[in-house]
Image (cartoon, rainbow, N blue to C red; front, side, top):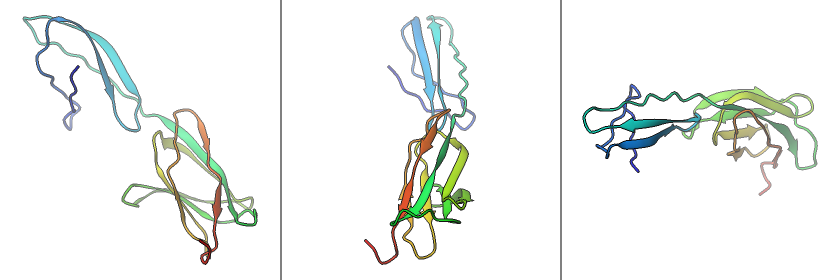
Length: 143
């Protein structure tokens, strides 16, 4: 088994292999995977082009305080690992929020409301599925 990393143009090269039939597989974070069969011989190089498609899911839930009351106008954000903003939304009067078309994987979700502690979560987003993530925000003085 060999592993190769693509260049900036998506091209890859592996070490020479013994002639035969192989399965070439590719994957990348927030993308699907792809595979194809490839037959090699001793006299020519072989090529296997693969296309990865982006996978998306939905993240939704309800933001509440410690008494169970929904928090109207709470801030829900998807941020990068460096805490750079990707998307944000304000919860409705029932404390509900929803992000559609979130790349599959483990995004960082941040939830905040004035007078409450900020909550960070890393929900699992699966292609074509809805992830439910309900949040309880603690008062600033609570631990």
